Amino acid sequence: MKDTAKIRLKKKKLLLVSLIGVLLVLLFLNYTIGLGDYRKTEAPCLFCDIANKSLLPKLEYETDEYVIFKDKYPASTHHYLAVPKLHFESIKVLNRSHVGLVQRMHNGMVEFLIAKGIDTSKAVIGYHIPPFISQKHLHLHGISPPSEMSFWNRISFMSPSFWFKSSQNTLDSLKRLDL
Image (cartoon, rainbow, N blue to C red; front, side, top):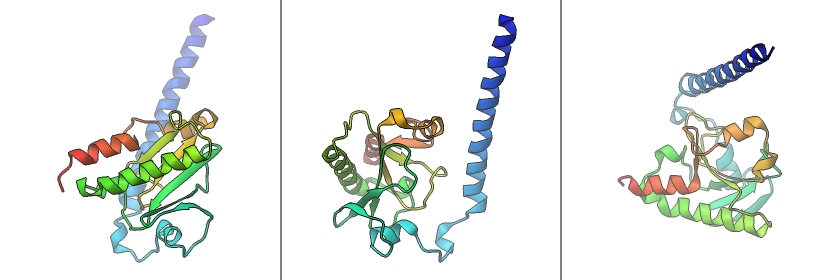
């Protein structure tokens, strides 16, 4: 009886890993084949519109360089995005010259979360890595508490992983890049 239970558990784990693998392949294919090169399209950028106040969700915080607003599909009770006013597709297009911007966005998100009474040592603060991005505009996630995240959101925002990188790891990587 115990052997069949172990076999069933192994099958369930194998199925879960297989489903995650298929999902990752589909996301990759959608990004590379389905969406194509964003520079060839004239489609407006949702986050550019929000950052430049053409589209108005409630901005929680604003500087000359970036805005912070609540995520439309929150992964937890507190889920905010810091979006630069200048358009950058993702962290992959940044270099060492962008360290200042990324550092200011990080510091701003941390200060914002602290002002909301959130323990930032337990918060998830980071970036998705292409092709695992929902919007082709750089955006920093600030999420808390992780304990309220669903199973899938915990996977989606798991750091370190090849699809999500903490803000500090992003800064460290940028500092090692050429200009």
